Length: 620
Image (cartoon, rainbow, N blue to C red; front, top):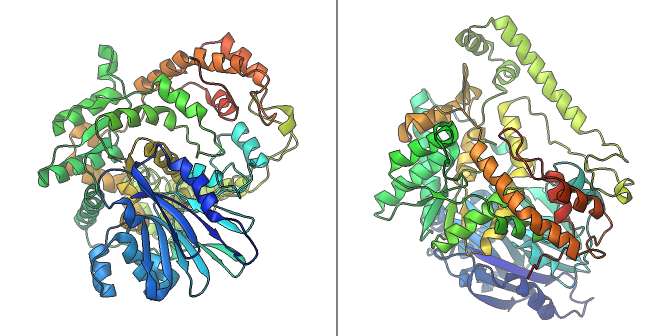
């Protein structure tokens, strides 16, 4: 996997800009990220550069590909899992993954994305037709940011590199920033807080040519095929095998893998199967990384948060590496400019874990992120799903399983269906102007209408809801942010539960695979029972008081540094006039950061205000 960046002049006859100078400015943003040297290259209209992201896998030189006779050039990052089958179909020698993609494009054109399995984000320049095509895999494991300004197409999998391009004006999207400050905003799919920088959405194509640009979906819900087997064991076997493939393919390029563990189903099953893969290959066990601190007393040790994690680690014979949030990680996050770096509050915890992992030689971190949104959905729509699909006998059997009458269940299903439709309609209504839930948002923003959280399609069925969650932008906001932060430490992330094969399998399942009677997450729980101790597979407690308290303590320890940064920056602290900085300073001085009954503190309004300010964090 590689870091990559590039610039292409879309109208070379009308513009005398030296793109080599543009590339030099962009490449500066890759310094201190990834591993090894940056390799620059000018091929046809492309001025690009690549750099190895982490140890293992292909070298940086494989971030470029070219077919001379076809007039095709490609730059990007790709790990293709079906490379052998693809090479046989194309009747070519097995080469680098990006070379395979380019040959697939030469044969199928833009339809080539349909034939690819793996993690990829890349750009193809077709000099025969004057077309530029960028594409991204459905799971979104590799970002793709781009800007079209002044006839220059600038792109990278690092947002700060695109922001550094001389052709890209330094302007924020005022309306999105107003929403970012005001609500717990998931950025609209494809958008950033920078007015001119877009994100290519997972499973989408960007096509440039003949003075036009178009974003289209190449991975669509309509292409999902129903998954049907004759018995439950066949479903369980199929999922177990797919999980092994998805994890094994990603582990193949890892030199020193590690995995998130929390005691939850998703992270536990990923870690257990990764450990089994390493054992089969004769490799050392992966490091088990957790945000959870060491329990400080008997009550904390007995709580499911700690007890389940201990049972899991004892069963696998591993010692968890505890890396709770710390002051330096929090301050690093607050110094990130959200106009140049993808925001995700989860980095408040993750940066300390990344630092500890990198210090121990880890190059790949496995995560169960994305499971809740699809594979391990709780099946909350099962009754309305059965109702609208006409499977009324099955609905009656589900009612009997939980000792309720079919009539009550049917009535509940109708209510569930229309409640979701009502929620859908409400999300389409614009928010009002002038009011704010953030006390630190200045009056200058009151003129701006806050962003509408528009949902895609009706999701009264489990497939519809899972599809919405995959397309909402929440998943790739986190994966984009973790990719960028991890690249600073030579780390890559692996998300097996966002593998295209897993996603399509999950979306094609019948609703009863997600819920049976009172038991949610049914299918993945059956697989978990094969690999995990009883304490983990049967755990339904999602509370994490120790982790929340660790975040409170780290924020409180960082509070004096926040106050000092605000005081040092008086007069220059708010470049946009969006923040009531004086009130923020007074509130930080006036009260401690305290827990809220076992939950994380309500620090969000202060956090987003600090993120949007220009502060002098150097306290030396």
